[in-house]
Amino acid sequence: MPAYIVDVRRLEQFSAIELYDMLKMRVDVFVVEQECAYPELDGNDLECLHLRLMNGPELLACARLWRPQADANPRIGRVAVSPGHRGKRLGEALMREAIVECEKAYPDESIELSAQAHLQRFYASFGFKPISGEYVEDNIPHVDMLRNAR
Image (cartoon, rainbow, N blue to C red; front, side, top):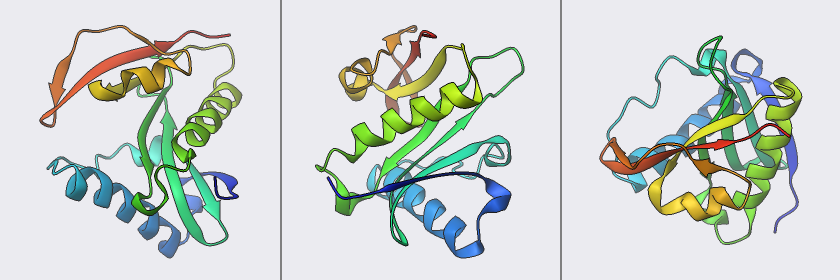
């Protein structure tokens, strides 16, 4: 696995170049690679903490952490690893760091995510359990998953 540093910030703390790199990775992965036409810029990024794994100036992976509503569980979403760095266990590192940061920001709360259905086993390895049946979102089968507070 490449060396990385963890960077967690709010959207307004990014430079234009840093923001461009993160949004480009998300579009490259979700819209282009997965051929999923959906509103990537959904208006929620302003409310999120953005987690990035960095190697110097190079963005390796990213995710966003947020609470969609005051009475909802915090969520991990937009989980993406740079295509050039897959197979190097960065997905696991990204999820471990995302859980740590969620627990810091939202102590003693369960964490939710909407998993692509084929990744259920991956997320289960971090303690997430399905809480919904399979459904299609943006033409991709998904399942909602929950990790109980520790």
